[in-house]
Amino acid sequence: MTEVVNIHAAKTHLSRLLERVEQGETIVIARAGKPVAELKPVTPRVEIVFGGLKGLVEYDEDMFTPEADAEIAAMFNDELEPER
Image 1 (cartoon, rainbow, N blue to C red):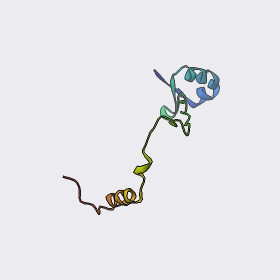
Image 2: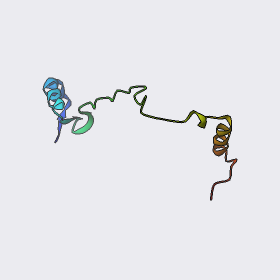
Image 3: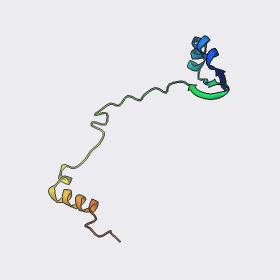
Image 4: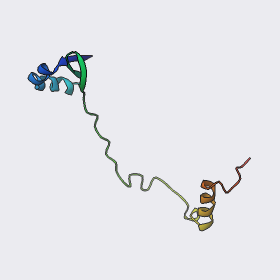
């Protein structure tokens, strides 16, 4: 459940409000009853591991030829007719 608190209460009880946010609550801070900001839990970032699929993805080196590159470039340049 979201609770609305005024700025003075938020400044006075910031530590308590942050404890509640850590438990998953969202707190809306308002000025004269008008919402101004939200305190909500931070979603953890997903760590990107470069090379994480190494050994899991297979491909044929013969696919990478100048002819294939030209064909792909032509597709992006609308030089080939669409297949029917």
